[in-house]
Amino acid sequence: MEYQIYDTLTGFLTSNAIYQAGVFFLLWVAFRAANQVRAEDANALNKVLVTLFSLGIIFNGLNTGAILFATLENSAYSMSQLEAISPTAQAFVDTWGTGEVAQGGLFNNPINTGWWAVVTVMLMGRIWTKQ
Picture (tube, rainbow, N blue to C red):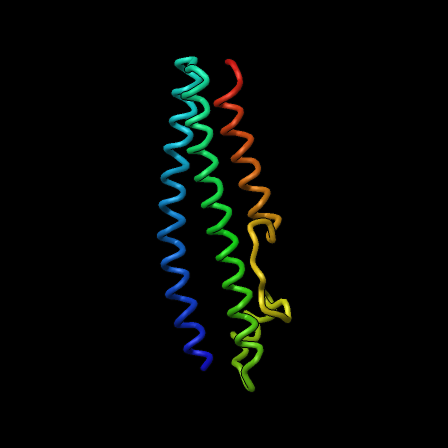
């Protein structure tokens, strides 16, 4: 059973990494758009559109991170419910285990939330401030 949990987790981590790569590509596009808006001193409509685009990417990044941490915690919980686990699995449970099923949420991990808050400030600063 431990192997099946690891196998499922590995499949999820792979798909999460691919999705996160897409989010980071779109984040790069958002920074390019923000720089262009600032360089051209664009009108309010263009600034609003780039802001909405950027906020959508930030939401997806927060969501991807939240799902990652919830899945790690839920996998640790699943392993902790097994009758016997290997020392490696015990280390995984000790690292990620919370003793309960993770409820998820966009803002449950302070590192993930803080990183995306910094990205938000950087993007909005590029879009809405003058040089």
